[in-house]
Image (cartoon, rainbow, N blue to C red; front, side, top):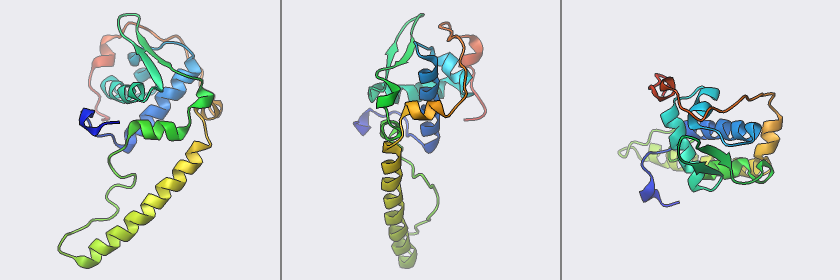
Length: 165
């Protein structure tokens, strides 16, 4: 995906929201409004919409606009891996933020930061190998979530800002 099109920098938190929203959509099984998704995963609706936009751009979900609009998976959850979700979000911040402070005036710290960065890159590659072996469907089966009806009319509370973000 082209970074120039990005309005916001994704963080690891976005990945968690994406996974929760997609599991919710898998469990629900039909078109669901962003406000209902946000309430169900206990997240501020504006942030959920930003994350859902990434998932639409990656063709993991489809969006229908309007009063009766919402989001739905574009393919079977058996064909969406956790690695697909990770790639769709395109996290720009490191998974382990702040682990290595790299002052430019200290050669030791600079070399150490490079070494640790290489190890973190290897860790991420291995993590993605594992995530390739798990699908959205397999993750959804591990939960006992029972979903109700998705409202297509957003209520006023869903648009209010949250202190959690």
